[in-house]
Amino acid sequence: MIKRVSLVVLSMVLAVVTLLVAAQYAVGESVVSFDQPKALSISVAIVVLLFLPPLFLSFFENGVVKIINAAYQSIIVLSFIGLIPMGFMTPNGSLLIVLTAVAGTLISMISTVMAVRTRNVISSRHT
Image (cartoon, rainbow, N blue to C red; front, side, top):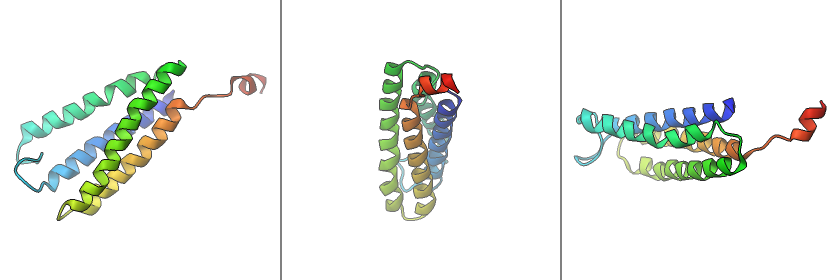
């Protein structure tokens, strides 16, 4: 359980860091940037709120809850994968955006696998 919770928290931190890095290298007027602190803080709050369901679901050991958690986290993985080409489209700072998106993808994939992984109860009782 500790591993699942910590991986979800790490994914959330990477999502916020990716958002802040993308805001630092904003390209236009209609994107989130540090010039609009209210919009940036609302965006960070939305990202944190979107990570609350998998965080709460990580505490449960039920198989159905684990599958729901993995399905939710797979959407997060797809979001990080979608950010990778977006990082290449920015004129400056694209390497940092791509690196945080790749790190977020890897951590979220590991978190999704850990969400559905089960322990072998029979072998752990006999050791």
